Image (cartoon, rainbow, N blue to C red; front, top):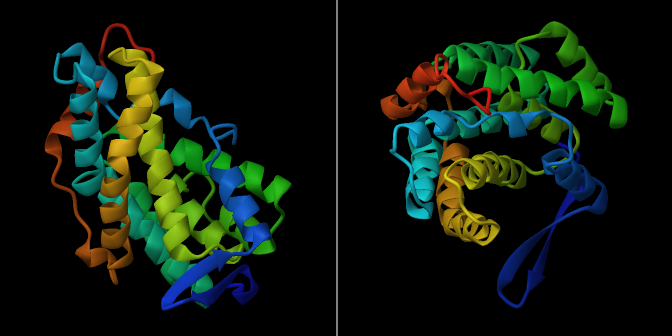
Length: 245
């Protein structure tokens, strides 16, 4: 890790971590909805859930995303992101490659696999051009077409000096926000309801982040949200679709 990207200061009896401006600029840019990864075109199975009447309100949407964060793909991807960050920070390419291969395989449906790998590939492609890094470029070559967004983000964040907690919290926040955005369009909900849902999910994202950072091995990861996987599978044959998952 680039140690100049983070410093800890004492205010009274509290310790406050400060991210240096260069690392913070990358984190904000990479998580912006304007960053061209195409995540907006995926709903994580939500479109089918709305079609079947399982999600009809703001509270339903919050519950759906909570499940995704704590028992579904968010729980796995958060841990994989943290493991990728650690492997990149230590220069352990074999460990990073193993995590990358596992992340690509760990998907419940074809659409969820596409939802992970298409933004992952797009993220790396634009990042190596806009924020050149020889380590990220070499990583892209080794895993062309198999990079999931969470793992690629974790590795890139590590090489850029972005602290792991901030990287993980930021990525999971963006993951949740993307599904909220889909819900606003699909349920449909008003923009204010969307922001209320986003605010309600902050403590859930914090829990998911803490869980991700506690992971020391991929053997500790797993999902317990089969309904979300089934919704994604049924979405593959949904007659009218706005989203790709």
